[in-house]
Amino acid sequence: MEQHNDVKGSSGPERLHTILVVGAVIQLLLLVFVAVKVSNLETGTLPTGNVVAGDLPAAAAPTADVSADDDYVLGNPDATVTIIEFSDYQCPFCGRFHQETLPSIRSKYIDTGKVNLVYRDFPLSFHPMAEPAAIAANCAGEQGKYYEYHDLIFANQAVLSESALGQWAQQLGLNTADWNTCRNDPAQKAEIQKDLMDGTAAGVQGTPSFFVNGVMVSGAQPYPVFEQLIEQMLN
Image (cartoon, rainbow, N blue to C red; front, side):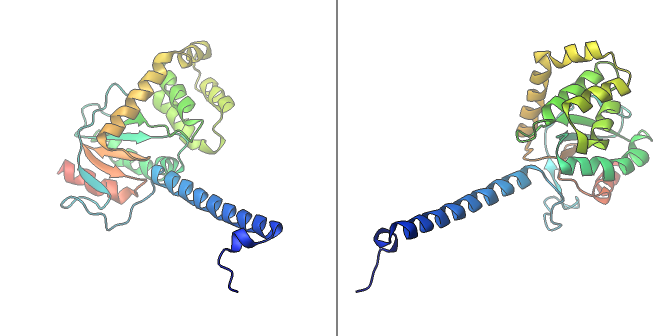
């Protein structure tokens, strides 16, 4: 007679084997789901087919209402173009942008007074050092060394740790007692939460995300994407 219920009718070891196989498949599916979610939050370059607005680069979206708030400005405060970046110090794509793309933007546009950059914190929950690094940089800013500290973090992202944060503070000649007091101030976490809320309200779904005079650019796009958009705004 044909057997229709293999699990129920099988012996103990066979049933256990089936259960283990099913469990392994479920675990694999969960790992894939988590990996996809993480990939979506850490945003790399986007497909070139995502054109959403006129002549704008493929990765650019229509204008959003987002402000620099009271965050630190790199470059001429009165520049024609402002880039507001929502980023995470532990995000690899953010590190790629700061090492591969930002130097060209800096030399051609920021250092010449045409563009300024405002970095706003968007630490992702699965990056345990992202928020401590953000607080450390903000507290370096209290002593006039925000972007110097910010640059050290991204240049040494692979060794980001609590001890490294302290070493960089000493390297920049910060008053470490004041710096540590600042890091323990609850107002620092509140400031980061405000950045997170503002970014979310503006449509940020992953890091890095940029607003170039309000036009959203998602992901660690290559320099030509930013150059094209900046040139359109300057002209």
